[in-house]
Image (cartoon, rainbow, N blue to C red):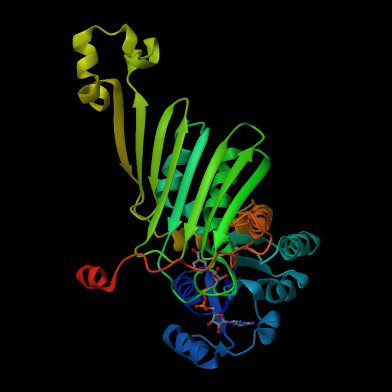
Length: 362
Ligand SMILES: NC(=O)c1ccc[n+]([C@@H]2O[C@H](COP(=O)([O-])OP(=O)(O)OC[C@H]3O[C@@H](n4cnc5c(N)ncnc54)[C@H](O)[C@@H]3O)[C@@H](O)[C@H]2O)c1
């Protein structure tokens, strides 16, 4: 069988990694990389021994499949041209900047019999994979995704940039409709929100609190899940899952402090996590997530089976992100209609600490 002819459109921070990995795959011919920044396209193409394009149009006649890694607001116009021609795509997350644009891409893929996969890469995080192997039925989920400002993805806010990862993961775990969304968010750097938090209520009783920031000192990506089976803590950065379950005697008889004798009751605090609750820390397998995602794309193309993250999943995540954005744009910081949305915070009352203290801290 001949190799799959592929290209990467947008070879900035992430796209150059797509191109690098594809260039090493035996079953792929990387026929070119395209970027409106011609110098960037040239530099990446030279390094990988492929052709550079400053426009993706010529690629429409050259490829069987492509990765679209341009800024989010350009996903729809660029991806649509490929899908219209039946060219299969891996489009980076989020699928598009609006639910309407995401729905159009999902539809185009179906109408033209093209595979559409979305780059929700955390589905390939070994820690999330490990979580999914455990029979936990989460009832309350808390997710936090915080990172420093990178200067990229300013065409969108933090909800579509970072929170969308957790929205996709939570939708995958919950397997139920979202009944209500209550959110707030604030802008730090521009017109879009850079900090956001949302409470989601699902029809099956699951409640999830999700927070994201791109104005944080250091990166942190955690999810906490509680269910009748116990607790799971997922550290996406460390790729580690911490599981806590009641010990066998607690599962069989419960643990009611009122029924314990005074000596056992006084030991309860010290023995809680040594005798009554068991803890297991599991490190996820050490694989590269982007390679796994690209392999999944090739596997779906070769077998005709759906990829792990379908176009429909991408649409589902953007649709929920849009509900979060709708709610946070309605949030009033003072109770008055002139203080609404990510730019509606009132003026600061003054510095939080005096310059002398600031010097000490620095
Ligand atoms: N899955 C993840 O974890 C993850 C991480 C980072 C970025 N992303 C997504 O990847 C996409 C790109 O992000 P990035 O950080 O690489 O941004 P970036 O700004 O570093 O790169 C985007 C590149 O696309 C080029 N470009 C813009 N418009 C183009 C067009 N019409 N045709 C060809 N090239 C064009 C730009 O010149 C730039 O080089 C975004 O959608 C972002 O949300 C996903």
